[in-house]
Amino acid sequence: MSVQEEFDSWAESGKDRGMEQRHWHTAKHALARMPVEPGDRILDLGTGSGYALRALRETHDTGLSIGLDGSPEMVHNARAYTDDPLIGFLQGDFHHLPIASNSIDHVWSMEAFYYAQEPIAVLEELRRVLRSGGTFYCAVNYFEESTQTHEWQDRISIEMLRWDRSQYREAFEDAGLIVAEQDTIPDEEVDIPPAEEFPTEEWDSREAMVDRYRRWGTLLTVGVAP
Amino acid sequence: MSVQEEFDSWAESGKDRGMEQRHWHTAKHALARMPVEPGDRILDLGTGSGYALRALRETHDTGLSIGLDGSPEMVHNARAYTDDPLIGFLQGDFHHLPIASNSIDHVWSMEAFYYAQEPIAVLEELRRVLRSGGTFYCAVNYFEESTQTHEWQDRISIEMLRWDRSQYREAFEDAGLIVAEQDTIPDEEVDIPPAEEFPTEEWDSREAMVDRYRRWGTLLTVGVAP
Amino acid sequence: MQEDLLDILCCPLDKHDLELEATERDEEEILTGTLTCTECGEAYPIEDGIPNLLPPDMREESPA
Amino acid sequence: MQEDLLDILCCPLDKHDLELEATERDEEEILTGTLTCTECGEAYPIEDGIPNLLPPDMREESPA
Ligand SMILES: Nc1ncnc2c1ncn2[C@@H]1O[C@H](CSCC[C@H](N)C(=O)O)[C@@H](O)[C@H]1O
Ligand SMILES: Nc1ncnc2c1ncn2[C@@H]1O[C@H](CSCC[C@H](N)C(=O)O)[C@@H](O)[C@H]1O
Image (cartoon, rainbow over all chains, first blue to last red):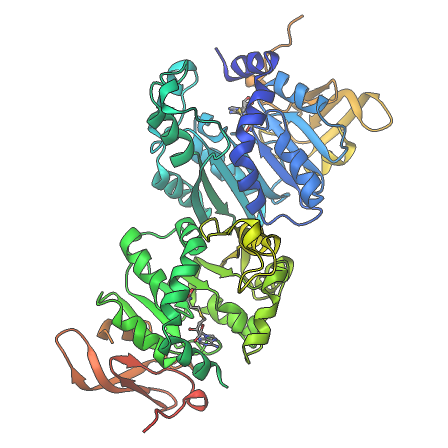
């Protein structure tokens, strides 16, 4: 199954909105850190339902922004969720960005970067499209230290990149991005039931669930184009 | 009263350790975001008790680092709190850093920057001492949006800079630093008594205390040397 | 697709400018049309207001 | 003061290198001495192991 087909089926079954809701718990904290000024142009890499661009429009009055996704159903839905003329959606591939050099102020990406099959090439593309001083906010829930997430790979046919914190930092620097910040943002909102309710349908133990959400949550790496 | 005398008297009365304890609530979160690699050289601007350098040595195995402070009593105490040979303390002034150009990997400063009488000159000095790609993590509790802190100025004879978030961003950029992040970090640890215990000795209302600690906390601005 | 987007978009293959040919518009934007690379001549479709700027070999034909 | 610090330190006024004259040491570091700017000749004291690199006009005399 191709990336497009896989995510088309997610979008068709409403998973785009489900992700929006779940990812928002930590995404909002990462988004709040972005040094976005009014009029800035944002690229959302693997935009899904497009919520990040909608949020940045509301909070920062951002300029013409692009939500890019490989899945036609994802961008189709994303487009239907807003009629803001300053948010455009398009189908495109991480490795071949259809975006002019130095034209983007900040790039956001949540739960999408690890689908890159050639991550350094993607980072180099991002560096190309970013203006000097622009940032790449890269947020992932699937990473080496968060061991409870490792099994996600079994549920999807696309190969997922399982880097640890230092591999993210090194790859950013290899691609010529300065690493300005790295952090894990706990998900404090997901409801964790009391111990006696475990095992649940999804979780063997309360400890495992705490490790996934409260201990690790989302890994944020911030790169800056020099 | 000069800056030195003011802070000498703080250090003599144990306020250095008191600040360490209180500032740690939010400082630890900001420190955890720094992209510090083993061997990195850190400058702590207005080091007080020197806790930040001690923490970074422990967590990141940092290299030879400098705690700078104008107050001889502060650095005297700070030196007594550690015998780590890779942490050096010295007396110096923010505006005239006795530090070679491009020699520092990252600069940390907590609750000190707003004492700068010529903040742009200080930022330019920081840019000079930072290597390209190095960061300045600037944390302050006293800033425009956190209105409950404004009265601090009445208790100290040194003029304090009361910038808002955007003034911090603009000043960093004026000095040639890229702004990679800005965030407010709530203090979730300070104990806020139930409503019926207000007014307390320090606080008129519970709302005021919540606004100061949980709503605003510490303003972090991260600059990157290009 | 907003016409202003043309300023930011480029060919995913060689990064050259794109030329717009709109076949259907409403008050705000282009609904159907083609974006053609001014250098390599590759054509990218706009359908339902959404440009498909995947490299041609990744483009899956829309089901009939 | 660790002798290695000399690599990073400079004169706060003209940013030139400093020359160390140590008058008291223990196994690890310099306890008393002077750092002198190789360019402007300004001398900065080291006391109790701590260099005072304030610009001279900000230096307060230690109480007798
Ligand atoms: N190589 C690639 N090029 C373009 N999009 C890709 C891609 N690999 C994965 N994607 C897209 O990345 C998205 C990941 S799902 C995450 C969606 C959204 N950012 C959120 O936080 O909810 C999917 O919509 C998928 O189609
Ligand atoms: N112009 C200046 N040059 C050097 N140090 C200064 C200064 N203005 C203020 N300071 C120092 O800045 C410190 C602020 S108090 C904060 C101490 C410590 N960072 C903490 O978080 O607890 C004081 O120790 C004071 O002596």
